[in-house]
Image 1: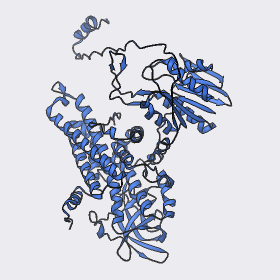
Image 2 (image 1 turned 30 degrees about the vertical axis):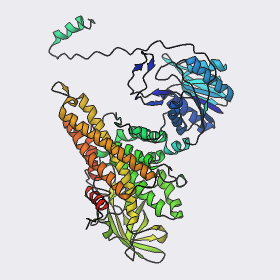
Image 3 (image 1 turned 90 degrees about the horizontal axis):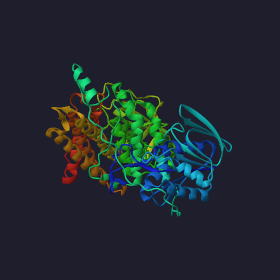
Image 4 (image 1 turned 180 degrees about the vertical axis):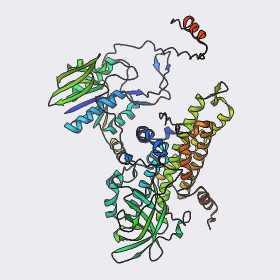
Length: 246
Length: 392
């Protein structure tokens, strides 16, 4: 079995968010990047579990410049076998999905895992687009994935409940919490990652269908006003006149 | 303890001097410490109980003997990676770092450096995985800074030797499966010998009532006519140079390690000072607080640069014992001062287990004492620069 895990780099969750170029670009200065948690904790680890229990080769793919290599090395340290970096960058989901699909078409995978979304731009679009471009079934927001032969059983979270889907491989699945338990690499894995192949491939021609006009930060939260417990009149007045909730 | 929010200071962009792999090693150990050590360490210290359940995790992570070649179960990593691992472990707790330091630098290192091929094959893989734990016996009740005066000795008895004496202040002693013991032979020459738990006459009573390194187990090694096979003697070590080279290896780890503790104190104090309001504004805005914080980050930065340079020299095989001694002394000295100032910034909260500072502060009193006291390290530098020995 040959599995492809799509890896994206995202800012660390504690990063301070700011924009440059007239609010059209994320300011990366001083920001620490990590593997998108949904890609790492759920997609990659579940792929590694399948490798360990059923036997599989786990390929990793990322679309980005050389600055994405630390995150892909970490994914190799966790246990991926071979990595591919498609040497281009874009904010457009269709362009990115086209690159992944072109690579996947060439390699032929039984299973393609993505995270359910990246925690920076929250597009949630890549998995579905890759499936469409490859003419494969797509199961989104999977919380559990079991395999019997070439038949997969996938639990999906839906509003107020759960949906259980069966599908024949090959399939594209976007993964979320529940798929697997996050792992920490070890020194042996880090040393092994040194010599694992990381191929840099040039992008294929593809259209960009969207362009970002501008980003906006949410308005700063107002400070909290503390009213002393014996001043109920003041509290009622403020709730009525300022907060306008009573 | 409150949630571990640690973020490492990097005022001089020292990270840019590190490789991608070094950063991955550091971040991995940091992640592990946040997950496995921070949630349990306060309780372990309060109860003075070594959290033995983490040994498997430390082994699995690769914290035991990371510089030992992979063919013997080690990590085959460089010395900067090792230093960063010690920094992160000690950021969690000096006791946890001590456990890993002893295993790697004081047990695996001498077996790897002075041991026979059979000894290496027999012990190193089990020590690397944490299946076996080891300890190191050099200090005696009456011979601490002056180890050459040791009285522990063994006599030749044909196919084995008979070992007598006692060692004190031995980290990991109460639970270790093996001890690398330094003792004099019939000719008065210091030799290394591997003593295994279960050998009749060998006991390891625990040292109770410590106010420091409470999450690390310390004990004595007592040898009462212990028969040890001759094949357990390390063939490559004769004289005090053997144990001293182990100390150099461990001191190198300490130089990095205590900066982890110092960073944790600084990070905690900085965050607290920005949040704590007195006289209607954060105490971080007061000059006396800023003086403390500014001096802390300056000393941490200087020590980071010294450690990094020492790591480069060690990787090139050029680090001298005197250079390592200076780094160990400097790091311990500034870390103890930083812990004290950080404690003061936190006021009364600084003495509680809600914050890690008082624990680090108490731990550092051991670290500035063991593996050569602050005073002995001053004399090492003094001797190195003047050529005159002030020890005697």
